[in-house]
Image (cartoon, rainbow, N blue to C red; front, side, top):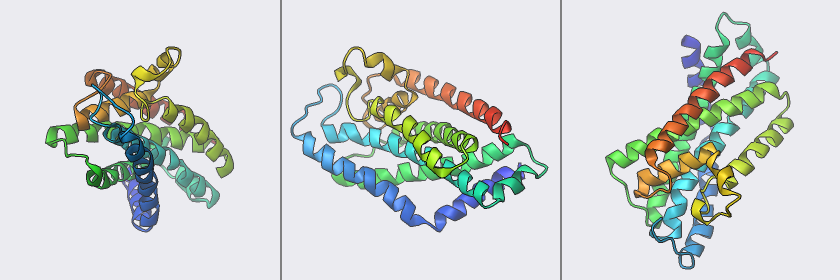
Length: 248
């Protein structure tokens, strides 16, 4: 398991050298919160869901930030392949499962850090700390999101040889997953034909789980959210390891 730690350590070293990337990945969703959330809070009422639209939006933006960061980690695999580092790792006497775990651990840790960082500026716009139990539950959901979508990003990067193709593929994943997750609009307000699609979206359960953890309100029971995300995490990890093993 030394290779897992070494790949994780390498990702953390790269993160420490590029804090501007972390800052930008937090500034963009926070700006979205201010522009959209604050602007609509006085117009949109959320009875039984949240005190105002801004507080409804914050958990969704945390989940989406973790997802985007996790998926985007696959680009590091692209660079490793381009500069020969990945080839050197693949010929080393280690299993491909360990390589996947190492890349996933590094990307997931980065994603979790960025999700946590977003919570601090959220306190400036009226968000209140949910207490230790709520914070720990939200952190658990962030871990599940980070592992799942980082694995998806690593798998996409392993199957697509160029960064342009990787960008297009991740866009095809993120746009529908984000738009149909309940991060921006309550599930109950969506058209009847859209709601079933929303309920097969794993990010929906992440958003609702974090929303319950941080605000105490959710449109899906938190136990169901946790079970779905745990299952999705297992499926993506096992499936990702299998597909990575097929990489040439």
